[in-house]
Length: 115
Image (cartoon, rainbow, N blue to C red; front, side, top):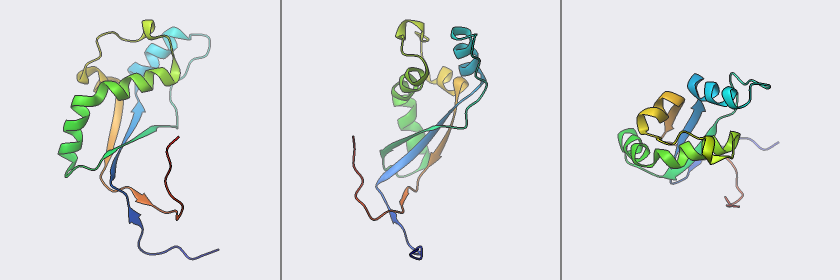
């Protein structure tokens, strides 16, 4: 095994980790009472164009939250008729915790690709 280098290459992205909270699971369990879910160890990580500060990232999130909100809903339930119709940034913050990370480090030598 090769030794791990002390310097990793950062990529020009910031990461937003989105984790569902109780109100999200309450909605989901209302739709699927036969198989309740109370938490998940998985979280989606969204990469966005690199910003100057966490405040700039949160400002981006306050303008673009609905893209993430819709993706989170769609991951669990694809019928948009059952989704909350008035999705606000306030509701997003009630339904999801999020972490902002300004450093995204690439530990691999292979090129990053998109599918």
